[in-house]
Image (cartoon, rainbow, N blue to C red; front, side, top):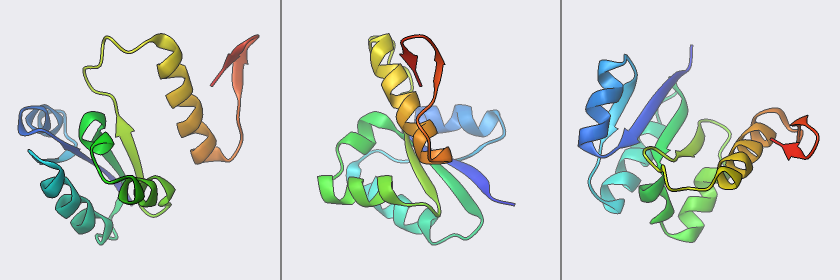
Length: 113
């Protein structure tokens, strides 16, 4: 069975481990790329969640390659981003759902997700 692995700063990775999720702590974009390369080669990893601020700092071509990956699926996770507007959250959710199921869906009038 495929497993979820989170890649985040060490202080957040500890929390994921306490919750029972595999987690890798990284401090820099270089460490992130090394962790993503290692995890992408692991056939047991099905989903890699990456701390969004780190994911956004990757080279655009590298980031796009991971966004397009289907095995494993790599997603940016906006952990602790309380100042992000609700519309951004809906847009991110819509994008993730469309990637996962292949269709754009909505939950009600005017609210796409």
